Structures are given as C-alpha cells and as structure tokens.
Image (cartoon, rainbow, N blue to C red; front, top):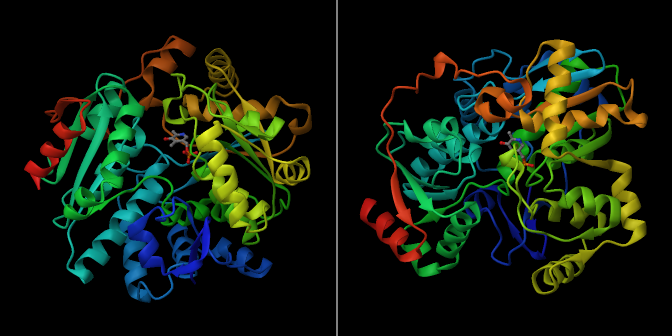
Length: 459
Ligand SMILES: *Cc1c(COP(=O)(O)O)cnc(C)c1O
C-alpha cells in the first residue's frame, strides 16, 4: 500500500513515512492510492471477531511492510488493554436511537481509541529506529488529554501540550495536568485556542527549529488515526446491525476526522446509506453541504468545545475523491480559501456529496433541550457533543429509522453543559482518581520565543 498527497500524486510514500510526517510538505493530506475493498463475506465474518481483531485486520491492509504480524498484534492489544469496557465499544439501544459508546478509554472521549494505537506505534518505531522525538500539540480539551495518556512514561518521547489558560474545563485540565510523568509538559498559554494552534504551526514551519528538536505532531489529520476509527463502524455493523444494509450514522463533527473514517469504511465496502455531519453553531460544514459555499467565519465558543472549529482539515480528503483525484482542482480551491477566504463546490459535485452525507447544525439552547428530552425519555445523560448528533432523529426523513449516533465523550467531562440542561451537579467518577492529585503546568505568554526557549530548556 502506497500513499500520495491530495496535492501531488507523483511522490509515493510508505506508511511509516506518512506516519511520522503527518502532513505532506506541499500542505496536502496523505491518502492511500486506493482503499482496500472488503467482500461482503469478509465483513460478515467480523461478527466472530473482537474489536481488537477487526482493528488488526484493517490495519494490516494499510501498514504495508512497516510492522510484522506479531508486532501489529502487540500494538493493537496493548493499545486497548486499559479500556474500562471489555468489548472496547458498546452499543445501547433506545427505540430507534442506537448510542455507540466510544468513551470507555482512559480520558473518556473517542480520541483515546486512535491515540492509544498511535502511542504504541510510535513506541515500536522509535525503538526500531533508535530515535527520540518531541511531540508538540495544541488542544481545546480532549486531544491533549488523550495524547498525554497515550505517550506518558515513554523514554523515546517528550510531549508538550499547549492549552489556552483558564479557557478549558477543570475536568479537562486535570486530566492533563495530574500526570506525574517526567516526559509530559503542560503549557497554559495566555491566549485562546487559535493562539495555541498558531504557535504550534509556527514551530512546525520553522524547519531549523523543528528539525533540531525532531518535532512530530499528532493532530487528527494523521492517517493512522483515521484507520483506527474505521474499526468501530465495522464493529457496530457486524456485532449490532448485521441485517441492516442501509446504515445511518450521525457523527458530532469538528475537524471531520471521525466522520471521514465512516466514509472510508463505506468505500471499503460497509453498507452505509448516510453519514450525518452534526455541527454546533460553528456550522461551516452544514452551510457548505447545504449551499456549496465553504467559508470559515470567526470561531464561536459553545457548550460543545471540541467542535468549535472553522476549518475542517479532513474535508480535503473527501473532496479529493469527489473531484476524481484531480490534485490541480484541490490546489485551486485551497488557494481560493487562502487568498479569497472561501471556495465554491459545483452543483453536480455537491449533489454527489449529498448522496453520501447529510448535515445538521445545533445551537447551545437546542443542545440543552436535546439533553433534557433524552434524559426525560430514557434517564440517560448524553454529553453536549453527542446531543448535536441526536438532532437528526427529529427530521421527517429519519423518523422511525434506525440511527447509530456516535457518543464521542462521557458527559462527566462537561459538567457546565449538564448543569445548564438538567440543573444537576455532575461528579467526576472516582475511578479516575484525579480530584486531589497535584497539578503541574507552566503558564507562558503568547510569545513564540518564550515557548521555544521553554521547550529547548526541557529536552
Ligand atoms: C474531537 C471531538 C469531536 C470532533 O471530532 P472530529 O474528528 O474533529 O470531527 C467530537 N466530539 C468530541 C467529544 C471530541 O473530543
């Protein structure tokens, strides 16, 4: 299996190369030359396999020569050994709503499912290559915690996580800052999430600095994260919905990573009828699907902060498919985005996109109402991200259809949203044991030199 960039298909890469690079040098995203196609029979046989076995099977089709069979087996099994649910992912049914619980990992959000695999893969490759790396990432909450948990206590890796000072929930902060591990460095930036992200980007493009420290990134454009996430789409079908050949998935969406994994599963042969892009008031994708215009606006803070995004990076990957792998077209629209602040998708292509995708948008007051209604009917509390994905079930076209809603986080991570919706105080579960642990983080000004000096002093 070889990989190319969405902006240049002349250069071919191995899995290992794209794993370490993350983003292509030309600014494009890596994609396999072709998706691996599964037969109907192969997919049905997944009903006899565990989550780990399905994951291993799928990864083996994408990792090429990078790992031997027993190495891949060890990577996957180690990745999931700390999950609190033996099945890894479970599905709970409430009439026609099927909640796909993706939050049984160590930091209570779906990001653990892929990040734990990345941690094991880095470990394997760094030992083999005798390399050390420094991972630097910005977070609005969940990514940072998942990454810290996956990379802590690893001698080959230092991880630096930048979060906006005083702008994430106590729970989210504590999940990151109570790790007593020597290779974890939390930095609270006096600024907002965009400032954190810009600082990280600035360090990446400073090739002298990034080469000097062997810098690596783990954000959601990494192809390995996408592959890890396709697993639960197959798992849900094989274990919970075998007879349903018109699957509908509704997915809380920000950077388009999670839902893109569903699209990949469909391309690989899974009978998915519709993927519903659920957004909060930062609804760039909903506007795009319904009007054809992709135009980022200012980011608005919402009750579902992990979806407060205006540029959905992974969207470039599906567009590449709909544009029939025309890299020049991708380059043109990405230039338009950069210099004109928007691009437009033609009607005929938009209609094709709408065959696969639908889109909704949900503001904070609707989010609270959905949490309240779902609790009233089912006595189950859903988190505010998941709530946005429940909205579609009220639409005429979807009423009475079986809908699989990805439950991307445990509600206890978002006590403020729950208090607003249900007037209930939510305790943090005791099994996490972080309430009284000492927090460790450095507050640093929003200034590139201060950050670089801090990082250099720690490695
Ligand atoms: C990251 C995140 C999302 C958005 O996922 P994308 O892959 O960025 O679209 C949704 N919900 C929660 C809880 C998240 O942490």
